[in-house]
Image (tube, rainbow, N blue to C red):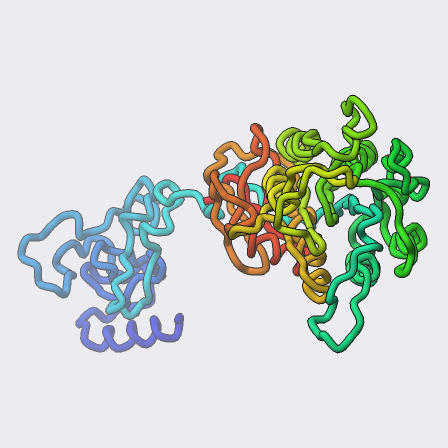
Length: 448
């Protein structure tokens, strides 16, 4: 740049009549013009004028090559040595050279770089924005399993092939349940609660209703071997009635001790309506009267404690029972009762059948897997509560899911708050599936 300046000065000096060396600051002629100002400054005693040219002191408008006859005094420079670049004694860079690209000396500073006028640099997010990366929670899941006598006595066409012999429903359940447990045991704490217990009798007495007060297998990781050992063999002959409420009581007593940061859930598997009510007035009332307390137990677990229950039926009869002394609740339709339980448990299916109604072994295996998935922990505990709950964003595997305050988790996709303080969110449908598959979700609180 200094070479360009020297060249300009040399050429201009040839046209001047003054014999003084143009580079000699003591002999510069008034009105002498050199090159353009360089960042608002000149050399050898020249002063940067308002037209962005280096001129000798006192040149005024006479040195303005534009020939402006107005002689605007703002175009000239002052001889005040305290002035900043451009001759402004305040040193305000905004009054100096412009960024006109036609000026050969290059652009000077512009007002865009004035720290007094530019807004402060921001990140585009308010100061309270929080980005949370949350892992899918571990679920304490208990299979609440009917092991009444009807499971081994009743047979079904397990494969839809009339050429193969029918097998017991228990045989199919044993096979499919152990497969599903093996699939999920590494990530989730699985347990087993059976009703009645192995001590139940086949008598028409209280002995048929005996049930343990706690699960045969408490929820634990890698529990497939323990559950397999606790299950009766696939070809076992089972005994007892259907004390379903006692089974749920035992399961919930165990889930009460689950860690607060882990999810809790139950999957009911049965083939008949519940009996063995604790309030039965006599032995006949134990077996022939429907125990309606089950619906309240399942409903309270969901509405009060956010413990969902998915319901799986195994070859249920869709008809009302007769009023007989046969060990089955009178005038009761098992399909109706299981539908009611599924809705109370918070994980009803879409359509007429609210529970998973398996009619063969293949369907049973698929439904058991689906029942587990819809109850697994898709509820995330936030590290903080949002100042603006409507500004929360939930992203799973690259997809952003919408908040829906009235979302039905069994039929819709998205997420919903599950407590009054907005510190928990539940992912539903595709959002939950994505969380279980990817293992994590991003939750942005109070971010633009």
